[in-house]
Length: 106
Image 1: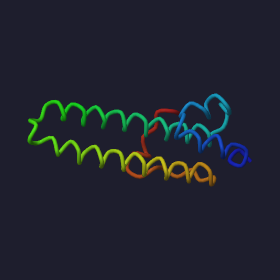
Image 2: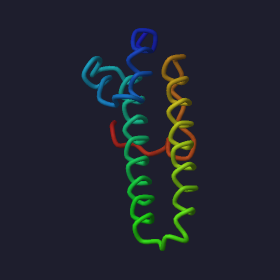
Image 3: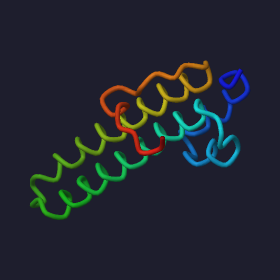
Image 4: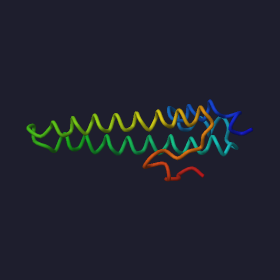
């Protein structure tokens, strides 16, 4: 019943991770997807900081490396968001690949 009632809110957690926490604070399903959305946000920020730093540290002849890293980062985050959206909207509480086991919101 919890999953059926909160599917939409859980799916939207990958755009606004705090939405399930505000809309359905007692839902375990909503909190699960809020946690997954928060982890995706944190991981993407960390990777963008790394790419940004590398782009300013590397010599101009090696900046192609940061371009490749940017594309890989963008595609990875996009893939995680798509998997999360599908899981949230279809009623699945499956961990995201690689980063899904991290728990910040209980």
